[in-house]
Image (cartoon, rainbow, N blue to C red; front, side, top):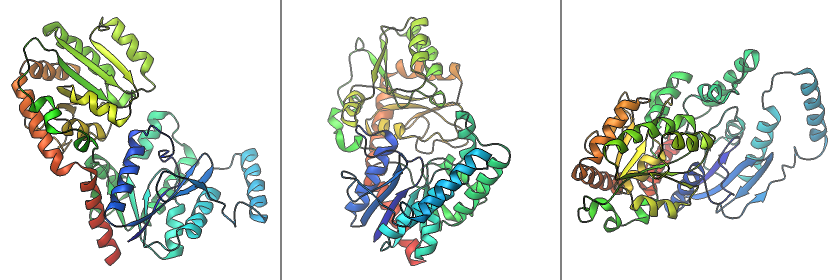
Length: 411
């Protein structure tokens, strides 16, 4: 099948190395779909320009003939000037029309468009209508407004109303929607009134299962000496909803009972300075290591040296992040926030340990229990790894998408 993978607004930049987690998601899905025999082309808007690629290694800028030159360009500049002076509501018109034209120009032979959907992105829907081909969305956020409010940039008044109407129409153009987690799926259906039959959860994959063999993982090795430290690890962004400032005092409670324990924090983000200060105030400088950003091979090496993975999400609607699949693939006993059946990928007490979000005391109790029972940690880690080998590879993710695409094309 000929597939156009498109991102109009806000997509992760797959040109930059090392890749972020979301950018790695795009790359792996793209490569695995190619591995299944599909013919893919990529089109995305970065820094105000449109770029194309066939392999996500080499990128070329796209000249959109009808919009980047001639009278249309002059009209656009004039309208933008008036809009800025009079402060008219923003409807993303020119960007969407230009991107739609770029799709028709560069991807006119495609059987299907697969869009990683973002706020105020409707160019791919326009192009799908013009080309008469199906559009499938991938959503990594089921509730855009709440996220924009958390970031302090949510639209208000008439701008908010217009933006929601535009998004509602954009959503209506998709023949199917792929959600990367059950929480996103639920919120998306609630927000936009979409038929649940049109929305399918396809979870992320992990590179770790392929990068690490079982015999490299602590869960599959000989039982450790009681004198050997228990290592906890966090991988991800240092942002408020990841709950690191809840994790640190909980970890301090663990240290008070089990001094032979350490915590590795892998990543960076807006809370970096607060995290460093919290570590100092709690006197954990000798127990907590901050590695900074690491590439996926380096992450794999650090996970192979750990025992317990932590995902203390707080104030977030989705509890199934990439880190859970990486932890499971590395054979870690994962302690993760969850509620209402989430995260579906963990079975409490079997392949992970689920705690209520934002609850420092319960999180500390769970960590204390696991640190004090190394055999339970090993048992959970082994079960998690076996599940990951079967269900959490990127090839498995691509195979699920393949089934959706085939059904959409037949319909």
